[in-house]
Length: 163
Image 1 (cartoon, rainbow, N blue to C red):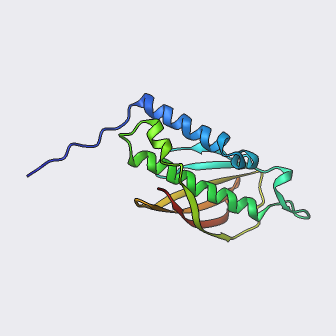
Image 2 (cartoon, rainbow, N blue to C red; image 1 turned 135 degrees about the vertical axis):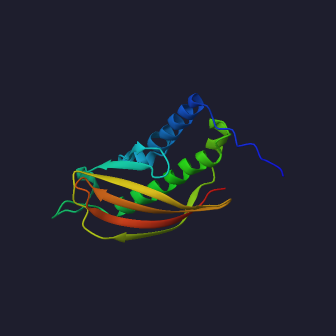
Image 3 (cartoon, rainbow, N blue to C red; image 1 turned 30 degrees about the vertical axis):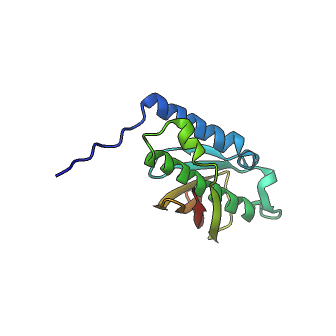
């Protein structure tokens, strides 16, 4: 009978470095996320979350002041990608921050389906995601967007190349 030693976990300091690097990547280096105003609320598995504050430049329906459908789609797409980044960091807990960050270099969306359920009305919106599958080359997620009242605005499912 053989026993396998558990995979070593990164230290608390190294986890803090990874969290900071992920936040910097997501909120500052991906300029489109910065343009949208996406902010990380939680970078913890199993359900990371990002927040979006409503602003006049994000309005899609001038008469009603609703959030633009493209902003909803882009937010859910970014949320799915971020959830996979968090999951990849967990899966490779023995790796240093630079090693994990290098894994994101080839990530890209290959399929995205959005279901718009209600008008995007609210002062802010919260997106969450669940990783459904994290394979060697492809990852899949399911995402949700709710407004500040907790009303479900849209759902999405996506697949991403992750290596």
